[in-house]
Length: 114
Length: 109
Image (cartoon, rainbow over all chains, first blue to last red; front, side, top):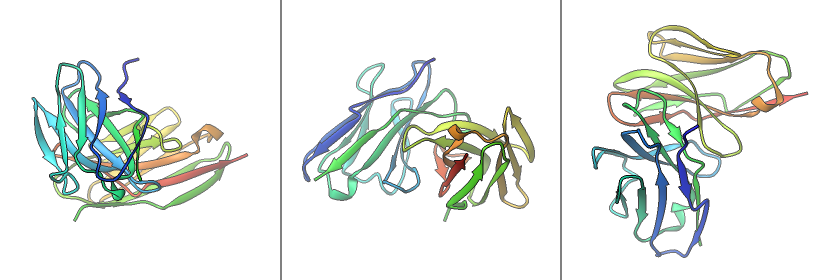
């Protein structure tokens, strides 16, 4: 069964460092997303991406964040200068059509900023 | 603002039926989904209601009432493996899912 894959599964970084979280969405999907979940809290939308550009972003997704689809398969989230409060589980998701259909989530990258 | 409220925790015994409620307040509402999450892992899709009424998928059913801004997930014949967090999720005209506060279901033997 096709799945969304994310690497690494866990990343520890020092405050102020840049991190890149990687995702390989399901191959025939057109819509890609990043969500985050702070421990014990709900899942929060960060950004959606379609047709090689951002289609929507939340207020969390400030200038520290950027997304890129550098080739035909990878979808990355970059955090330029990490803060302690960026520590969370980051989930990549993809869907074949619009958000109104089933979204498939990856297993997540647990980011710990120290 | 946009919000979806759920009970924080529900406990039930194996073989029982449990209902997890969700009330929502969102703009541009298209439909309500339910996702399951085990131990902080990947949320997995369970069901989607675009229209009022009941949708049944095996042991799980989901209900939506647009006029009441309310939905619920019904789990029948509970099994230990159903212990997880359950999120109601609103979707709309924009490309994002809005997750509810989540309900931690504990199934006891």
